[in-house]
Length: 560
Image 1 (cartoon, rainbow, N blue to C red):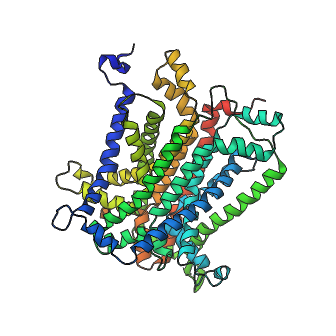
Image 2: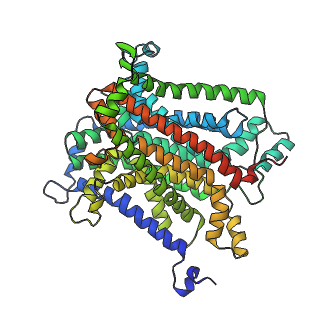
Image 3: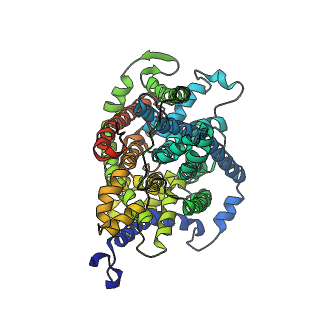
């Protein structure tokens, strides 16, 4: 027997050791900064334990309104986004569409730019001087309407990524049996497709709701006088430097995420694998009526997605929107040369690459250890699941402030990380951990545990099974996680705005500074440059995915 995996010899197995290291890393870089910030909510100005901050905040006018607005807008966004993303994902995975890879990139295109870009684009389309302002009639885009539209646009790719994974693997024998029994298309959808994608739908709803609750950039730009909790954090911490009250609001934002985790935990316990060792890959058959309807649907959604990015790109090449629409490249020249943003752009490329290279293996291996291994203390996996769910409900501003208070403390041995590229990479991995973790779990749950059982009976090590079976099957998800981390590291603002030094400013933060100074054209130009970069990476991802899957997943190809 292998001594490294024998508990009888008192030696901790390598999966248990890695799981403990993963939990330690999550505690240090995720939990500790948040606890440092949140402890401030129960300390008064003299450092004594007190609940006065909660009492003062509860008595602040407008708090109940901001809380209610946050919850009902997030619920509405979830109810709109998840069905839209599910139909789009269904079209990509279960229909015979031309240029499926291109439609996938279009569906994820909102990830190509900061959330501020989408909010600005909606203002330019539907604002007081917008091209389509008449479409809203007497209603204003500044407020709940604009927040809802912009948040649906921004959260759509987050839900789509999860649902594509949920629909990617299914046993084709189920559909063959249904066809043999004469089941209708609707019955097959209701009894096979929806149950098979149930976990993905729950995860997508969790991600979208949490994203909507914690997003501050969109309501800050397009919300007008409509109060929400995330903007309240920004006002208290950034405007008033009231870290204690900001921590109180952060607790309110974490509460719905913890409730969502409880629901997700219940669903996980009932989830069964959809892909067994004897499964037959499902390959959709051409159906003109279905494929044409879904192609039109993808065309409509894709047009809306590209129109938002297109408006930002157009703004970057006009002299002064909307009064002087003469085309010019002066904004690019100003942004890159005079404002010194070229260095910031190179910094963002470095941060994005390191985030993908560090975050992808850590997230996927941790998810694998949680889902596919059984060694280690019983409390360890629930702890990691809780830690993995928390980041989506924590606004980037709160995370960034927590990093300041924790890593900038003189007695912290990790103090040397402060204001380095490394701390920004760590903040990005933590900030976007939840979506990637849920994507990895969704892919891993679709693999029957029989693979591990057969490997064990053949005396094949777990590491070999992971490398030669699990990883090749989950390769599309691994590549998707890497692309997702890179793009978000390029586009995020809130998590990094407090962590950079003058010599390593990210491009997204430089865009924020340009926008705050009223230089909308240069800000749009730099946003467009980031979009072009992330789109180029997405194209390279599609090409790499095509060749890697042909090499490592030949079993998915039809036998002709």
